[in-house]
Amino acid sequence: MPPKNKIMLEIITPKETVFKEKVDVIEAPAVDGLIGILPNHAPLITTLKTGVIRANIDNKDRFISVSEGIMDVKPHQVNIVARTAELPENIDLERAKEAKKRAEKRLEETNAKMDHARAEGAMERAIARIKAAEKHHSEYY
Image (cartoon, rainbow, N blue to C red; front, top):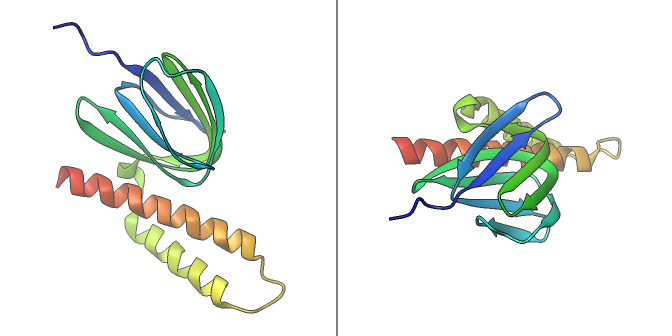
């Protein structure tokens, strides 16, 4: 049986390379909706919204929390440059839940000085971190 075709996925932030590995399938939160990428995909550049990337490697899913970025797809390589990205094992789940509560509280305030866009962004990042961590723990525990 011939070896399974894979695609190199690299996720970087301004600070570091967060993930670099050959994978079977990539699912990412594009601004127009969830997008799936397989090896030999047609070239594509798209923007990503805050969410969770799913990378399937040998029938096991890896979940990576990302916030806003760009995905550059080539037939054998996908490069993602994101503002932030975190592997689930590096996410403090309780801290992420507290951040979500703080963002919810800020969004409930009617203070005109409060920046709702910033609070919404904090909420989206917290939710993505929680989802990635919880999916990771449900896969391994």
